[in-house]
Amino acid sequence: MKKDNEIILSIQDLTVGYGKSIILNNISMDVRKKEIIAIMGNSGSGKTTLFKSITNQIPIISGKIKIFDQDIRLLPDKDLKKLRRKMGVLFQHGALFTDLNVFDNVAFPLIELTKRSSDEIIKIVLEKLNSVGLRAAAHMPVTSLSGGMAKRVALARATALDPWIMLYDEPFSGLDPISIGVIAKLIKELSNTLQCASILITHEMQESFKIADKINIIGSGSIVASGSPESLSKSEDPFIKQFINGAPTGPIPFDYPETSDFKEWLIKLRQQT
Image (cartoon, rainbow, N blue to C red):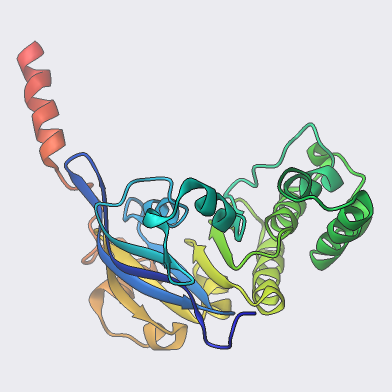
């Protein structure tokens, strides 16, 4: 049983990179039960890398990621697999199986990862679909769904195992304004129903500010601003103001910075000519 205000996910001084490039530098944050943390930042700032680090898909240079005080880097593979079952992931494009219908998509993790009976699986799947308003669409082929419906099916599948942590990767991308509002409402409701910790990686400002308890803005691989939506909205910091207002000029550069890898590549390219 998770206690009120309990820290479910803790990221401590996390540094991650590829080769010579440091993508995330000294990132720290805690996410508690029923808390929604929105991670924002310009393209290439490291949001997706953070997402992959939490799911242990990429190596960590230094720092720690703890789930219920368990350091994921120190867990044996068997225990890590068990822990991953407590993570629900809503992928940016849904990642539904197009050769399966709605019911079978949501049932998939229950069939593959549990030993529940057929009757139990039917009950759970219909409950999960009902929670996203699609119980009566259980029989439909995935290919017949609208973008918003497909996203809701993916959300039902992500919650099938009642996760402790929900990770949302650009949940609003490609959706019309009404669907964006529906998904935002569902994220908030599921956070309370599942009592899980939620991390929301998104560019959608308006709806995220409505449902998030805290906003962390990443810039150049570090957290440059952190606070409640209300406090950030009132901030006079030039970086925060540019990001929130979508201004084309300001501290956030448009040009991708030159790296040592680029310079080495350019020298070799010129040497070939």
